[in-house]
Length: 252
View 1 (cartoon, one colour):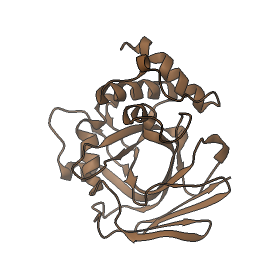
View 2 (tube, rainbow, N blue to C red):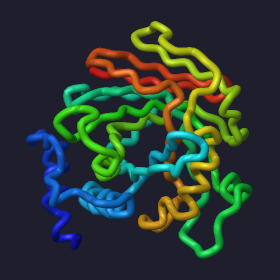
View 3 (cartoon, rainbow, N blue to C red):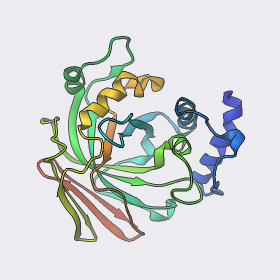
View 4 (cartoon, one colour):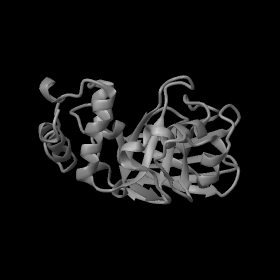
């Protein structure tokens, strides 16, 4: 479909972000038919929202094809963050690990190696992602529509971190999530994607190609360690990763 043909669907999602009507789904004639098309539509959305300042990337299992979404600066925040819950349709909170890049990884023909990707990382942080939807309700659209809608991204809070130790054991890392001062989750492991560095390698070697690759300064969040917990306004969220740090969010 031509960019002009995509525009009505993108306009619907942008209007929903601005308080307009939320579509139940994109009309069949305005729905991507393949994953590649869905990413083209997501890129068209990003072109309207602003420059990409970060990424979310994840996978259903270590063997699954990852998925990604570009994030714009308006939804990336530093801890401690305070956000208006009324701006969201749903508020799903997830504890995540976020990498920031010290060096760019531009598109090139030769694949980046694991040591090259690790050398491009500047720091690793605790994070909180709010997942949301611009559609009428949570869980009513398929994955292709979710990809177009920034794969359910609402906001990212980048917390405390460290500038070393970027290879994190997905089975041994301890994560804790507190809501309003009460611990709701504390466990070892939990990220369905497994090794998060593999997600960065995938992004560097094609996942981010349509945006020119990965740029220095970008924050990349690498999937939930706690699942999604839906909360309401007036909720204080604290996500901590042993040895890394914590991220704090107040939803008002």
